[in-house]
Image (spheres, one colour):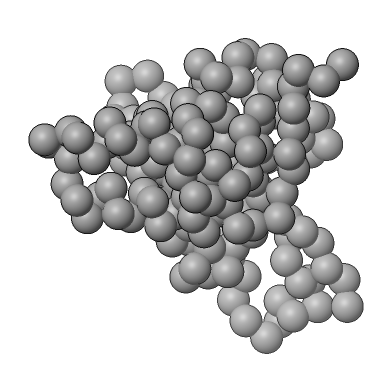
Length: 172
């Protein structure tokens, strides 16, 4: 039986309807932490290999609501690369994106591959270090909904448990 990480199980396609994905891969990242280089290189490599890849920098249409289009892209993607970086948890948008990605993993058993970019995977999992600092602010925010903050914590804990890549960009 032929199996592909992005294409599914070709031999079983006659047994069940095949999901038609708009994107093979969705990249979730915090641009200010990763700089322009890392997401650009990642996107270029995937694109160069013929893998249809979504990242908000290139795919969002001007003038449209970012939230609805971004969630549509998440729902139209097969595999998720989540680049956790120092200030990822400070971004409510990144956290909401992660919650939606983890829902897709739970509901459809979709593949989520974390990249720990200059952060310790245990800081993501346990919300310590810069992730703990971000949650001190989220918890103190009088406008924050407790259920929302709880869902962010749960998504980070689950994603932090996944096997991924620990990338220290300061290494030569």
